[in-house]
Image (cartoon, rainbow, N blue to C red; front, top):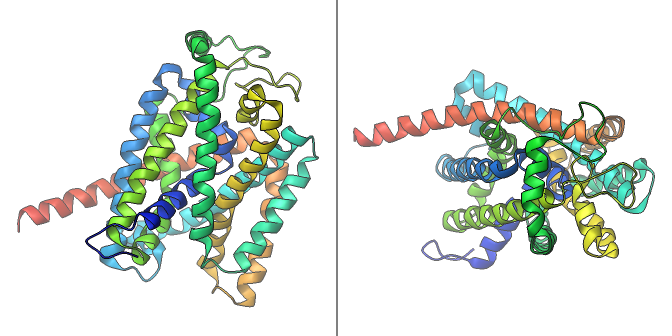
Length: 380
């Protein structure tokens, strides 16, 4: 772990990787999340990103400090720490429910991913994801952070690679793409149809994006803080955030430059309305690249799906017991049905955006607690 005065850079890399892997689920890796939260706002993509980065750094540092100082009995006690007993209990149960609802999005993303890349029936990707997720969760989570911590950087490198190649190749098209978004003239759009966005304006979108990810990270970061050197974790948070920000900017502007680029595989599908816009970008580099990228996206979905299923199961049962195993299988099978039944773009838009607002409310409670702690320190 390294001595407390120094920094263990190998551990920093794994922690940064775990933070990246948890953030990059099906919404991010497919590019659907980037379209709705960033690209849809045109030039204000940068404003959305600034709001997200400030909020993301603030609350992850706050969760890490609280976890290190308070040594919670259960990681979910972080909510009671910030909001008091009644509201804290609400946030505790709500975040557990949200993690589970986010698993539905992962199922939808896995189904759509293999469907658009390989033409496989929707159920194939969903069933494979649920099978490997069940096996991992039942096997226990001792090695989870190390496992997803290694996959995370690989996905971010590929997201950055696709974004960078397409961005450099098509940067001359960015002004035209911005004009399309501004005017709302999208190729193949039916009357009144437009790009899906996450909020009324860029500020709402930035807060919503920070808010929905917050509900994943509250117990995750405070648990990491209880098991890791504080300096290592702080460095991991910063470098993880930097990598995410670079990936978001490159992918978003690559999407803007190709907003009306059509899919070779799916009729009447363009970057602006595709289930998996990043596959169109990958395909435009070299067609075989989209096939490889689809497998990487699948790995990214898997690394996020595992903690999303583990969280609600561990909340109501003890790891290793038969109740834990039964609950894992039951919740996974329900997620399989819901994720297949609902449209992926609608899942991202509804579940993430709604939960973003709830997360933004939690940020207000956190700021109040931070302010009160600061006042108490000042008064000695």
